[in-house]
Each structure stands twice: as C-alpha cells, then as structure tokens.
Picture 1 (cartoon, rainbow, N blue to C red):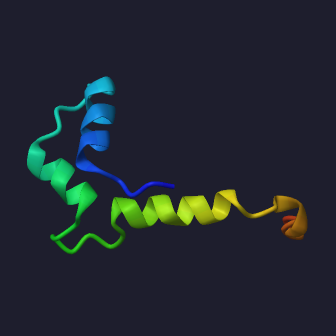
Picture 2: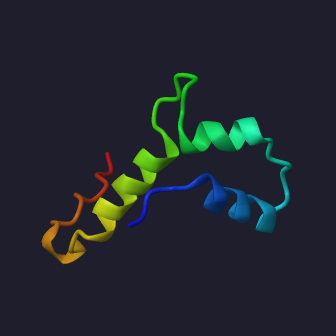
Length: 67
C-alpha cells in the first residue's frame, strides 16, 4: 500500500462532494497535528494488516448465551 498523499485524498473528497472539505481538514487527515487519536494513514495501515489475515485461521466467536 502506498502512503496517503494529500492529492489522493483531495481527489476522493471532490468525487464524494457531499461535504466541502477545507485544506486544513484534508491536511489534518493526511498528517494529524491536533491530537487526533488515530491518523488516517494509521487506520489505512491497520486495514492493510487485516486484509492480509486469512480469516479461515481465526476461530469463530462464541455464540450468544441466553439466560
């Protein structure tokens, strides 16, 4: 996976134009400086790790117990 670039995110935001994104908002997503818990790039990196996991090797969750 390539590192997130501002140009990429700007292109996505222009295609999903339900919200007008300011340059400051896009900059914060690309390179967080305001104390955000997880940066967008970190989230993408974690999703990439999950994508590579063979879900067939993970045991199923326990069933919900009725009282």
